[in-house]
Length: 95
Image (cartoon, rainbow, N blue to C red):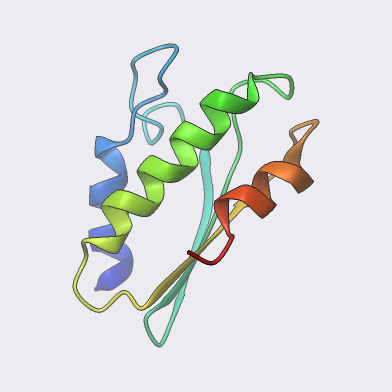
């Protein structure tokens, strides 16, 4: 049930450069939900996509998913990007 809500919410996350939902672009690779803890794997349209766009997309994902009842935590995993390690650290830092 939560997974379906997440999939629906991600339709509201747009690629900031292209202006198309990330779901329509098939950028979401995997959604795992266990006891309210969510892990979302995603990629960008190109491995050298500007880091600021990667961070913006990740922040937008976290924003829409965090609004879903029953979600306790969100971990994002950006894959196939030349700066994926650094971007994943930024997106998953404790606030």
